[in-house]
Length: 288
Ligand SMILES: [Zn+2]
Image 1 (cartoon, protein in one colour):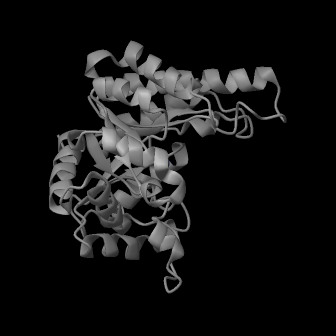
Image 2: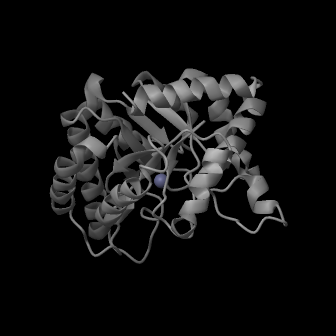
């Protein structure tokens, strides 16, 4: 059982990391992809890896990258060129401990419909995100690494999904490997993403009342293209959020078993089969 997308550097999970890793291993967890979202957390994931590599050999794989939200106007107008040049240095100096590039992608949610920023600020943020994504793709190709990508549109919009598919198709061509993590977009784009040979990461949203769209996407996704993920500490499965006896209300990697159970129910397949195939998928993508 593997968790293909978790933010160990994000609070409150960061403060609970020792227990979280122990819980994951006790639950049968074998691998997890520890994802960064900026330069600081890119260093941090490598530190966490160093701290636990003796206690839990091969448990943690690392992904370094800049989350698209970093280019939203409130984040001090960071530029992609500057951020990427620093990211390149981290990659160059630590390449043997880096297994993936990300999280990167495009995030138009909370950007397109805002009234507190003007047209130019919005366009600049979008351009920086696109430049950053293209540069992440180049890095992934140069180091032959898979990518973990994020795409989130404003409600009832599909600009973000369209743009990300366009960029991947133009820049990534055939050599791009990776996962569209937490995909919640339109079903019509799902096939295009699958045709690009990408995996789809499913998480706790599957267990939410509001997750009907994602449950439909899951039904349409072949099991050979599915990865389990928690996106912890975000998106705890429904029963974690609603269990009154549980004191830990945030997500943790051990919750990936709940995701596997949900997939097993929705797809009407045995949980053993879900675990076996998603394990193989993770290993093919991140451990090669
Ligand atoms: Zn994430």
